[in-house]
Image (cartoon, one colour):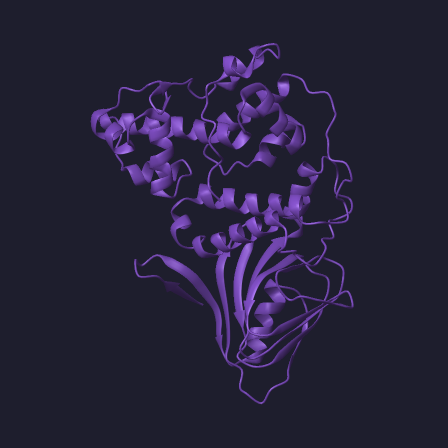
Length: 372
């Protein structure tokens, strides 16, 4: 297994197989994808490559054969296989019906067959069944006795689907590159991909309605905030916050907007910025050592430019300025205006009153969530 590197020496992919041994290739695809038959329909020799771009909660692979091949009878899938793109000619049969090869997603249960021409390269995202089940349990606010069965076609005419595909391709490019510097960011990306897929792709358990009308108590916000503080060094996603608060994702999002006038991810981002600010000040005072890049990666900001922009918006100065001079902005600012620091869930969440207007609770940045 060879690890490829980019110009900077950072790993970009791990070559699981490269060569002309059909039995060895079949063993890899059987193990990592699903049991299937592999039949070659070309006189040209096998010139296969099977590269692993990422392996974690989910896995991303690039696969090519260099000869015409039929992968027949995929069944008993361990999880879900999303084909997010391909070059060349390919065809897919899902549960007996012809389906565009990509973008598509295959679910556990139905028999899946595919044919790839010699010039075809395909990119696959494999999502274990338990990962999707956990996302469905939170997002759909119920048990998952029945696993999701997605519609196989990923409809690129829908703007939200286009956004998900951009997210997926961005992750495939960055997971073993610039994102690798921050396991926290990789974990966020993985969870975002899975939960967005459950929310966006039609499936057998989608609700016709969509409004969660269960009564909400103040404890919801407090539990979510305390969970964030206790797990700030882990790749938290909205679904994790919702599970800790014991409500659905939709309910949690509505509660954050109603009481704090921000999204859960904006709250989490501000909490991490506050931790990064404290680390930079500790470096400036000689109590710690490190660089801006190390602090940013530690708190889930692998992209330096994005971290610098959000930090400057929050604290009115560049991270490098804080590290050199210690900074004078204990209280975050937005474009020069004072704003409240990130909430301490234990101290403040229990005292929030629904009778107070949102601006009395926070002056947080109304900007968007972290980039995808």
